[in-house]
Amino acid sequence: MGDGSSLFEKIFFVGGKGGVGKTTISTSLALSKSKVGKTILISTDPAHSLSDLIQSSSSDEIVNISENLDLWELNAQVEYDKFRDKHQEDFRLILDTSTYLDETDINQFLALAIPGIDEIMGFKSLVDLVKTGNYEYFIVDTAPTGHALRLLFIPEILDQWIKQIAQLRWKYRQVQKSFKGQYDPDSGDDMLLDLKKAVLKMRSILKDSNQSQFVIVSKAESMVFHETLDLKRELEENEISINSLVINNVMKESDSEFCNQVRAYQAPWIEKLASAFAEQNIIQVPQFPIPIKGLKQLTQVAEQLDLIN
Image 1 (cartoon, one colour):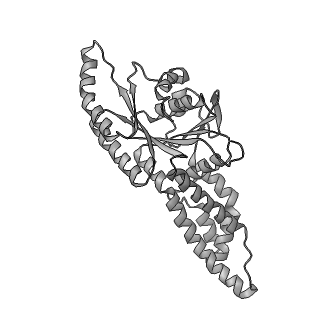
Image 2 (cartoon, helix red, strand yellow):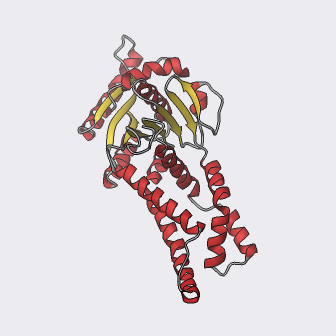
Image 3 (cartoon, helix red, strand yellow):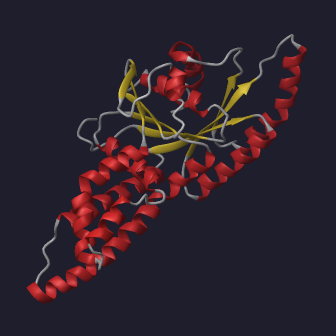
């Protein structure tokens, strides 16, 4: 750690249907990992419910929340604004030399909200943080299933965008060579090269089970079961390794008739989930009597997740 060569131990992406308790499981997993290595908990969920869960103030900056554990509620729009401000002149140079846009058109283009750019910049910011070598574990609390799946396609989307810009630059290169006999790379080319390197790193992170794995959070319920299987299938089709399935809010045995009825309802769905995830770790987290809030209570959940590695 430190020189960025080995990068990190692992990134855990925590995903699942909305309302299954991903944020609770993400935070608890981060607490578990912080016992063995420097860990950062990252939220990519625009709702940013992490601050409320751990009972701290919200911040776009990285903050320390306990020993060996930092929190980053990543605001992708803020990260894009930083990237755009840093590279505004590079974008302007590319557009000025490679298109027929005048200054007014270029200014309007730079002010546009590019679809999906917030997710792309969010992922790129994660990659940049990984490259610092400051952490051994990265726990990423993703937004509900659809958002988590879009993470998988970010490298391809960004790669296509780079290729389109590169084609514009190629025409510019040919003109330069015709008039000057050579082409001198500029800061616009440097920016595209950096983005290309980020794409390659994104792909390597997602495809390498030694670098990243998914932890799927589910519940023993009909609707959640089917969406969980959809997420599993999408991950497998994209060759993304699934580390564990966490079945949340499992009712314990009790003398209460109500609790036993809930347990009886959950039993067949737990069995179905166990069958579908026979090749993964399966962890059952019990239903707690009151909503989990604060690091002290989250530690109780963290103890259930020590087997995730």
